[in-house]
Amino acid sequence: MKRKQFVQTAIASATTGSALVACRANTGASGANASLPTINWQMATSWPTALDTIFGGATTFTDRVGAITGGKFKITPRAAGELAPPLEVLNVVSQGAVPCGHTAGYYYVGKSPAAAFGTAVPFGLNAQQQNAWLYEAGGLKTLQALYARKFGVIQFPAGNTGGQMGGWFRKEISKVSDLQGLKMRIPGLGGQVMGKLGVTVQTLPGGEIFQALQTGAIDAAEWVGPYDDEKLGLHRVAKFYYYPGWWEPGPTLEVQINLNEWKKLPAEYQAAIQAAAFEANMTMLARYDARNNESLQRLIQGGVTLRPYSNEILAAAEKASFELYDEFSAKDADFKSIFAEWKQFRDRIYAWNNINEGSFARHSYATLKL
Image 1 (tube, helix red, strand yellow):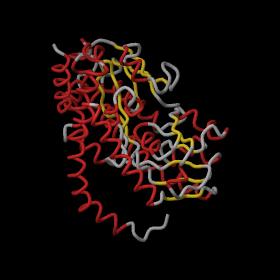
Image 2 (tube, rainbow, N blue to C red):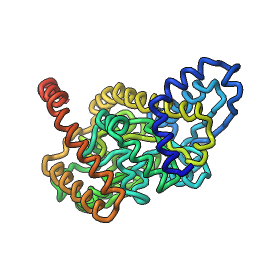
Image 3 (tube, rainbow, N blue to C red):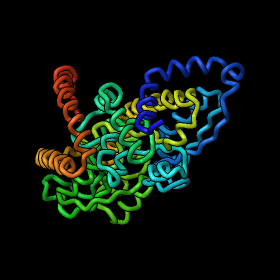
Image 4 (cartoon, rainbow, N blue to C red):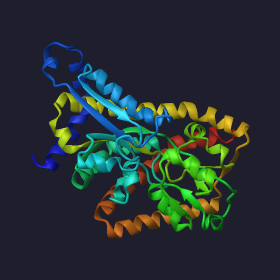
């Protein structure tokens, strides 16, 4: 079967996967399940285990695959660095050195800038909008075709952090000129936008951010939000905490599976993967939303200075973002095609959400104090 045909078949099966898994799971050790193979996989991840919510996306996924298959399909998630460097997960999965991984697509924009759409792009979609695009507007199908062709991988959404914060700074910034020469840890297209605004950009894994800030190797860094940032101790080495994270309004993480290994799996195990990834996607978002505010209040009470990005910086960043998209579209056919589709969806859902959720938020949040 040709790869394109295979990917289309795999995508189509996602809509019936949960029902199939439920039926198979109820058969127990006897019956149909008795004939299924016992499989043990290792999973590379981009996360330290100390970050229980983001690494938890991997464990939620692997635990559910095991439970659905009655323990016959076991996947063991490994911390960043155990099987591969944290920013090399896609590479080892693509090569077949590891059968699967849990990572963020935008770490690999150097391979294809279009991979950023699998995670988040600046001034893009929030978590709810991102899920709508992926699951219902053809985004996942489009990205799976890209990943199959470019990387020999099939991927599924398996986590979302929700809207992120705008990062930690060792000094206050209020104007675009304040960004000139600043050394900042920020990945993906957000990093490239910051680069256009004069920032010297670095991409570091989560486990290295604290030391880089502490030693002055970088002047600023973004990670996720209060819950994770507090765990990393970033408030101990940088005082100013900015919002919003305009480069990641709703970033998706994903399970990536070597396409040849995927082909070998029984249909029941493929369905288990799809169902478990969906659960991990929803669970991670709920956990972050439930935990972030408590952590933020502790950070503020501990002396952190909370600051919004100025309108000047936000306007400059948005302008630079869409200039970057035009540049990529001019030289990368994959990016151009996906961006055109994505932009149409963004415009439509922005218009709708401005009426329903936006009007509610403007009224309900107007009198709240941070």
